[in-house]
Image 1 (tube, rainbow, N blue to C red):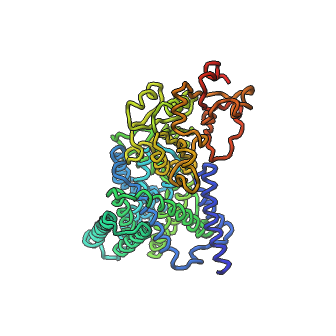
Image 2: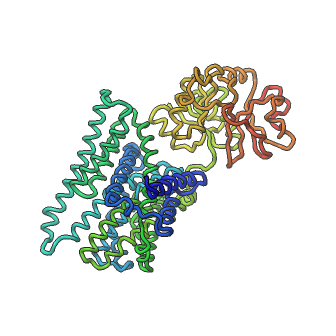
Image 3: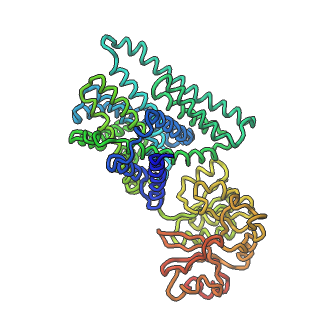
Length: 608
């Protein structure tokens, strides 16, 4: 293996994953770090030039990678989300798109100094908001589900539509002399409509075929992901053969059809693909940014800067305002969606190819299309990436940033635990399928959710509430483990806990598999029967503030307290577990949630 390949792998794979981890650790937009890394490798240090190193296969490989991204994006487009967000989604995908095309084209002509041909091409390219940028931002934004649905649907649906729109504009601009409206309406437009219809049919037909195979057990589990990925790529290839951009429609439709056909087992496949797409997006952003050359960046000018500002502060906000007039969207939602519109990989890929073809055709100002689109991509990624969470919080469109706890199973002791956490000022949600069992917590002011968390409705309802940690607290140890295993991808495997199933069942070899259960809350001996018995004997959960006087004794065995949680309001939450490192001495000002014996409670245990 040559040194250049080793350097390539080290820089791209290692650097992109380090950027992703850094973004997660310090709560930064990963896209911005990846973009900066690509600029460092490419134009700054000139150690990577991917299109030269990979050769003519570079752009086809990028296209295939984008097809996988939109396919995975299609897997999250559940039509049930349209019940609440449907009107906004329709306006963003159907009404706002042509408005943004016209406004963007006018800005490119009058502000950017482009001729009308390149200006319309620029306008058709910037109407898309890329799922390669939007989806990673939404993953950590904790937006209200309705607002997140707006951005998610717009990005995924408009991406292939925008690519086809740019192709349509390009074909019209490249028509030979003498070819007029007859050619457009007699050949170009019918061809595009037929290609779009064919690719949509292919995507739906392939999804129905997959469902037929799966329900008849004709596809082994080990091949499911590989076959679905292969089908998505084959559909992309077939669609692209009919028309540029149609392949993206086929891949997106295939993903949408799969998730809406309610095929069992798709959740596990979707999580696997999501991990793959994170790697693909990371690598693509580094590669495409690194492929920019200093000569291309030198084309940036004051007119392009002014055009970029117009797109950011005039074209998009005005387009969304006009498209949502008379809608049920609130002003906060309209302002937020009008600002957040990062462009991504598809815009860059289309601009690079279409701009060069238009320039070769001799259109004046065609050379400005690529640097102008690049300027919009760079500015929207940075500005929108850093402002999404702060603006969402300012407009009250985000869920709480406080560490929150969800408790599944309402009984005497779990209800007491939820009330104690609530009284300590920490967000908590008690979940159960029985209205009667939830009544005590509801009367105490604790937020409750009546749902079966293993159902689709229950899982979706739980995702709409702010939650960082989960405790499964039902009498059934197997059910608790099933809940933890099912919800671990949402909360994180290290953040799902369950009441101890009993010491014997925690045996690493013969007991319950760690993959099939959550971490043990408290000590292995604190099983459901013990906690239920203590509550019947008069023990109660209390929130005990840590002071200088009691700091050293709270976690000591002589204190006779069973400590379950350590809280620092608005900052941190720690659930005690024998499977974690030993809990360090809590700090003064924190509070512990503990099960307190009757005699301790009567002698003023709350003020320990």
